[in-house]
Image (cartoon, rainbow, N blue to C red; front, side, top):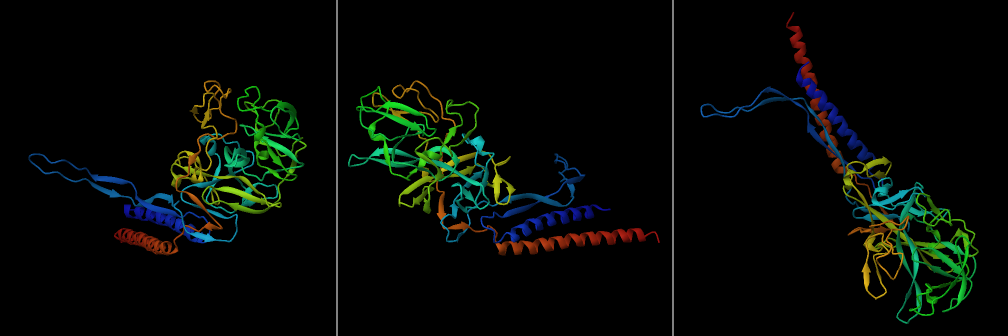
Length: 448
């Protein structure tokens, strides 16, 4: 058999692989958020017929003579660029306008750094909504991950203390808030822990508070801002009516209340509690809204109150074209993709302990994960909070477009053109096989 036949067979194989890529692209011409593959051909191995030589002062040089052995598929790449918007009319559908992926997975994953994100599934398909358990899920039941929203009391221009919702760097499964059983006052500390009391908070008054486990503790509220003996200000308590939502109720908490900072214990959602103030059910909502500029997910309760559920997280990959298909429209950042980074749209969510004011009124900036044991002494303490994600980046120009999905990345006109070219290339290689066979036949017939 001649080398030409070997080359032709290699060319047939390469063109068949190229046709497989084209066929997969065409079959997904109407698949939302599909990312088309692109192929390139690569020359195969060469053998030297004659070596080359450099010229001398007497004779000239000579080029090497080499024979090739066909072609092969060089690369099959993904085109991860953003495609057109396809309106669907559903509020839960959203498209990533720019680079990035939604982070999805199981309910119990704990993500505290970028290496944990390597195990998560990534997708561009934004058909999301809340299931019957209150989880934000995609169409396949994978839980969408984002940043928890918590309440922080701030003083407005009139001097009144009002709740302000903010995203905290707890990157976890997003879920609707829990509901309050009875009228009470709610307080959230710097760690996101929720406490309740039936007593009206007043400066200098001793009150009984209860955590989400039902454990009661007596505390005395601060008399003024200079009171260093007591830590909680009476103005930091938020009054709740019956049935209102408590957003931090679905934060991740240790299983064992007696060991609030376990080294190895897994974390779980506080779905069921012994608290007389928290209901085990989720809030009933009438409307879901996703903010395109921040990724903030809000819901309107039956009483008309707007509750912030959290902020959708966007994962950025060092090499987005290097992610690997796992199943369907899911990807994973395996070898070749680089690191995965958690970002927030418009940097709406930042690490909560980026700075604080010490006893002298000086603003002290801390590294990510720093939490002092003594608020008045920034040199003491310094460790992160378990379950809290460190290093949230800005998503840059990436935003969301709601009410629709990303269209398929298949360019049908280009694929049809490429199919014709591949067909002709395949046909030409079969002709080489036929011609080589005819020549071999003539060689065999020389004996007659």
